[in-house]
Image (cartoon, rainbow, N blue to C red; front, side, top):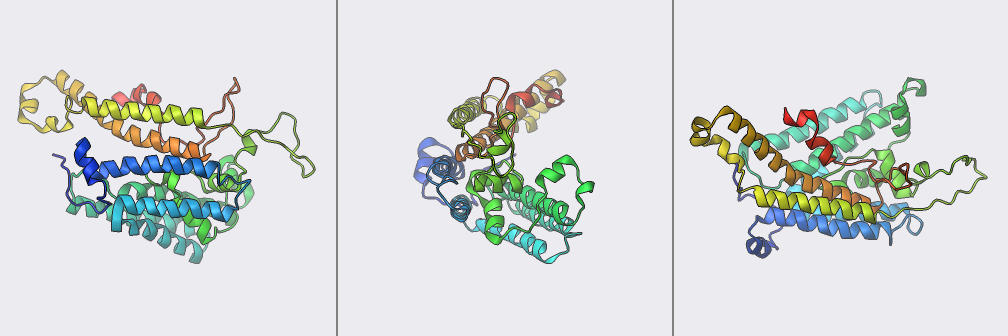
Length: 339
């Protein structure tokens, strides 16, 4: 049976709030960190807009607050937030581009596997927030970057697919660019993972142009294009609202469908196969809703910072789904979700 672990390295300054609302302090810390990130994202998009601020400052802002949020939520475990990407960056810097991508993949997966194994041994079946979540996001980032560098440096352009050409990276990032990409606060806690080139375009303010090109406009150096920057507020409000609905459903119905019941002898011996199927489907679906909350809220944080703009639909409505964690309705009604 899953249990709440007492081993938690994150901040306990809000223990009083956790006791007041009746949930564990690690969950309170996660929610607080995401609301703080949502507010910081607004500053990132407005006060530190790329038209007003140097790229280095934007890199530093995302990195510093990513580290602060990581330490707040994980305490000394946050050292791993630096450990995994640091080892991978050493490999990127010191290994031939011909084999570097495979080496980075191996190092990242071995490091992440060791963290998971440690949890299985010393904190088995616990629901306590731990560092493995952010490390999984970081692993996606650093390994995708390694392969993009390999595509940009070690392969001929004729060998690349359209997608590989789009995301190929032609030079090794500086330490600031690399660690900002890996640890930036909007996507640190729950994603979404994004390609390095998309992140750099966002930092430099170039992310709007590919999706805002006027019909028939030329991109030669003599053409000046004025790009209207759409507001993400509508998308942010929608995703935050959906996230809050998901967490409300989870809290409301968790006592009705506790997943732990499937191990009870009464459930195993005294219920029909049809009931077991119905209950398992309902209980596992309910457990997904707490992850939907985290993923949707993280999407909202990224959108509020200005990331994720994906052009306009046929009705001229801005789309903020260039990278996203989950499409809840699409997943829940798909055929595979009931298998």
